Image (cartoon, rainbow, N blue to C red; front, side, top):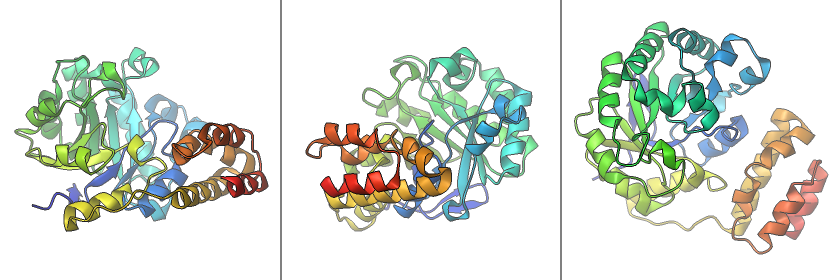
Length: 322
């Protein structure tokens, strides 16, 4: 049985069903391009506020900067108002997104306090109204990303998937941990399997996928249409190609060597500087630099040194001693 295959989201065909997750403050264009080069079938922007888009905040619009080299690209929006979400979807489409994703899974307190993200899962009527309005407002595919539930033992995903397909949503991503657990703990495979049972649209698994075993645990669930990888891909972008090779040809490729990880970091720095300018480009990479040097000798010292560099010349000197 081939687990890795082409995936259609509405009229958009992906080369494979291994997807980079949207991560707030992390999945900017430079990082998405790295994931694409590592074999990701689809990449997502970081989460952006519908309200901020409507207010035309320049800082928010910059989060939606996209490149033709990363297409197809999905843009994720969040909000709690039917009007703001449909209007933001139109703005995001006009800025070049190929797919609009609605966040129904973010557990961050600030987002939940505004009635958005995972907190929407407690209001099925509002979820239905938002999904229906967004789908009707634009002419490109709409997807959603949800949590299995808000609290341990709760599984609302089955009902939300039913609502989604009735509203015209083209794909659902299910993070198989409750919102209260954030990104910690073991994914609930049993609840994920229950959520998938009657799905008529693709259901993608998310949560704790970092290698061949954790990917297979989800992919062998009936009706699972693919996997979405978040933190497991950071500094490790070849994970997409490695999983494709493993599931299609049975070959378990080596993890990236120290040399390869530093090469990824150098590419990231170069692309980030091209996108933001030298100083800001290096500051932005600080958020993820620790993923590149994790488990290397003197990793803590390297991280501390990276956090102080402000020029490309400084960076080039640093990697000479790694």
